[in-house]
Structure formats: C-alpha cells, structure tokens
Length: 179
Image 1 (cartoon, one colour):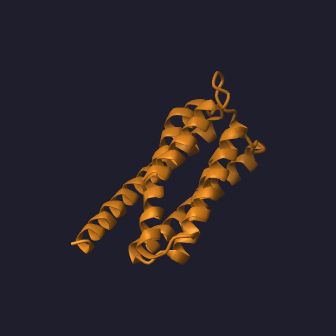
Image 2 (cartoon, helix red, strand yellow):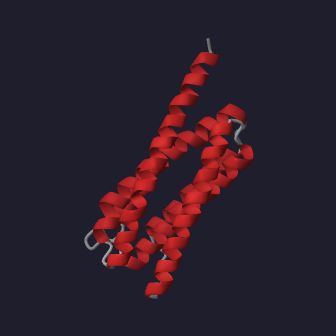
C-alpha cells in the first residue's frame, strides 16, 4: 500500500536526518522511543474498537499491551537516569504521521479497515526496526538505554512477523472472497 510505504519512508528519513553527523542524543532517543510506542498504542486502541476480524482485534490488543509496557520501561529508565526526553524532528514526525494515519483509518470500516491497519503495522514495525538498528542502538551512549533498546528489539521483530502473518491471512481471505 502506497501510504504505508510513505509512512515507513518518512520515519526512516526523519531518523536518519536527525543530527546526521553526530546522531541523536540519549534525550532525543528517549523521545523517539516514547513517540514510536505511543503511535502504535493509539493505532492499537483504534483497531480494538473498529476491527471486524477477531485476529486483528487480538493483534491490536497485543500492540497496546506490549507497547505500553515498553513505554513504561523507557519512562522508568529515563526517570532513573534523570534524562528528560527531548522533542526532535523524528519524534515530531512520528507523532504527525501517527495522527495522519489515525485520521485515515477512522474513515474506514470492516475488512477495508482491517487490511489498512495491518498493512500499516507491517510498514510501521519494519520502519521502526530499521531505525532501532541503524540509528537508535548505534547512537545510544548510555549503556542502560542501549541495553533497553537491545532488549525490546525482539518484541518489534515478533510484532512484525505477526503483522506479516495477519497480512497474508487477510490477503488470502480477500482473494477467496473475490472468486
């Protein structure tokens, strides 16, 4: 889907664009992590209320639960480290794109909503993983912050794989319905 590609590209462009020479600071990384998780929490809450497919609703519930837990860990860590998350172009871009995606999804219903939500989740998790691997982990100076990013990375991988499985299932169901 063209829109999900644009969202993913926007996340990566913003992540790579931030202080291109020195990379984001730990305070900026903290803001990016919190924003990325909040965007997916918001999308998951919307999907819990709008999705028509039970598997999509379950996936959305998992997104809300898991990303809320990661945000709690991140918030607890930055509080402990006395680091104040610093708003930056990447965190702002994540929030803006999340708001736009939410507005677009709110207009959809039924199977159309399910497919758009899941397609977005695939693109979003891939883009976030790319940012984690190529920008956030390499630039996190604080060892505890770096360790948290490394620790939560497998959850993002699992979310991506789950979303891809759902995407294939929805595509197969749609193809069967069109026969």
